[in-house]
Figure 1 (tube, rainbow, N blue to C red):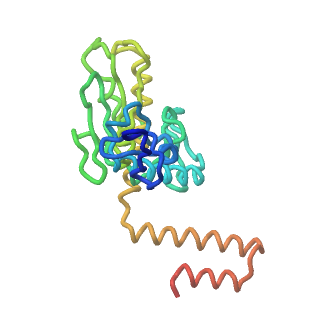
Figure 2: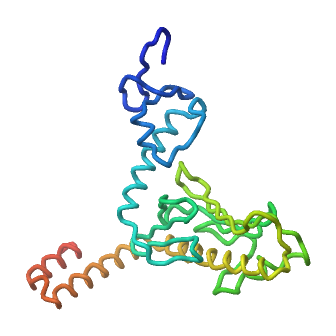
Figure 3: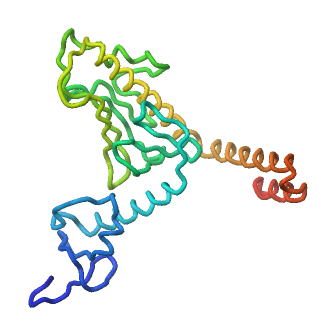
Length: 247
């Protein structure tokens, strides 16, 4: 609210009656609501106009992804995947959805130290080679004997401006020994998640043209099945085939 009770104009939508003061402007309640879970703060004065705009965009994208999301695979009740639409979410973050393409890199951190890190589309950092379960378990749990572990997590870096870092905490509150059976179990969970993230990153890096061809093939198969079921006519199938193939 300005001097002598003057109503400020929202820097986002232009409406009068802005409720909060930003670092470089003002924002109304309507625009705050549009941010959803993509902007949660108690200090609006530290938030810029651009940050609010980014949050509104991210929330809109998130809502659209939520409408599409179909759970197809779950890793240890932590990482939840929609392999059809190439989306994923982490249970601890609620209904926040990310695409495979959002992943920039990911790493496993133990006691403040990065055990290894993978940059999507680049060489593996730290020399870790991923395979099936068991391939990297030694790197996770094979620390110095009786090392005390007080932090164990996976950090996923994304190109989402509202959530550039997604943290999966694998160690509950407290401390455990690195040679304990419990930490071995946590390490196995970490490995399953890491292997899946690596698989996702591999899919992300498919050549665009190859992905396009695979998509066309999938669509053709879907309509061929409809034809065989009698749900569509031969003419309808041929028309769709020409459309998909660009004929």
